[in-house]
Image 1 (tube, rainbow, N blue to C red):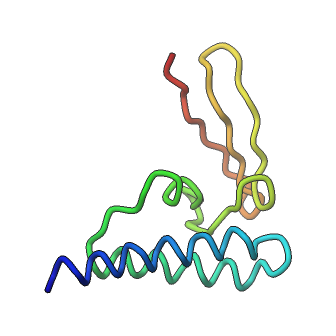
Image 2: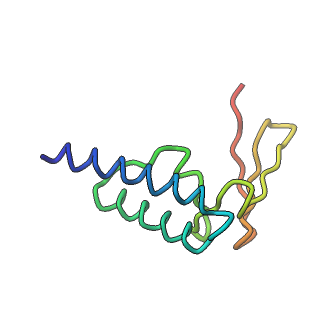
Length: 99
């Protein structure tokens, strides 16, 4: 019973996240709301969000940032890294790429 609820919740998170990505350009408020609901579902059922989902939230203001739409993505050179800047709060964080 518990496992089936977690499976349903996981599928629902994926659906909401995909909808949020597709709505991010045309209707950003709807996309923000869908991402918030997906996050709440993961917290309620204690499901770890997949990396691609969790990396789409700002680490500072906790808003949904669609790649390239609500964020700037730049490549760093010395330590190979990706710099992501949130357009809502201008917070920049790096993800170092392993070689």
